[in-house]
Image (cartoon, rainbow, N blue to C red):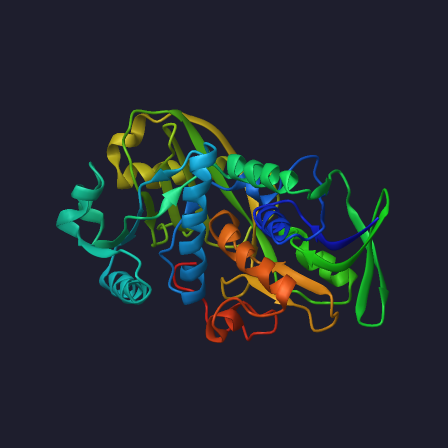
Length: 380
């Protein structure tokens, strides 16, 4: 059976893309190596969705994602929680950078404000104000359950007739000239008019099987969740400064809708693998308690590691390949697939069907596979 589009990857990008292509009356097949949807990087995410970026295209896409997820919550519980994001600065240089980001956000009608140190307690009760010079607060940012969100996009896509093949690892492709004819798995071969690589941390390896270099370089980030805790925290708190031991570059934590604290840090140096480490627990605990001392009695239930499929500049890739006229690349979400996936997938589905960029050219070209990657995002 031939399809209009075969998507490789049933994760934060592939699932909403399948749904939006289904809405456009496209015959879609999704091929996934895992046994069920959302079991790759999506499963390791902590669910933050923010429009408070410093790159315009990510602001536009994330604003749309928030709107989409708000509507999805009306249909099904995805543990949608509106609490905002609070970015904290420990010195004047960091605060100046946040002020500049606030200027960008206002250009795109994203509600945000600079909070002076003495006023931080009005946003987060019990915060250690002596650590910080101030922060940037974006009140309309949200948190959702990544797994529930992924599953709902899966069900909605399936209701539209999208087919899914799980437990099928891609092993190769059939090609002729500048066209991909079929994708091969360990079980069977699937032909289609077009193909989309949306397989997260594996996208660069899949690209090499087609003779392409896709600049996505995954590294591991560790995260954790607590047992249910008294209501203590509304926003996602992001400390933009490294710790003294140069273990974590930034760290961030919030309390989800059901009451568990969820937390993560950006490692100072790239790390790899999927096994949780003892160092993560001691580092994140020290940093969280330093920020809000009252959280010292939190009981940690579980920690894990997952991959961030990073691009050099922190902006995803959404483009048609120059090497193959019917191959599309949707990846490099940099650990932000849950927040960028819905808005980006909606736009990318229209692009695949019409070949017309759905955003103004100045923003759409920021997602090009062939850009220079020389302008790293501040709040990546």
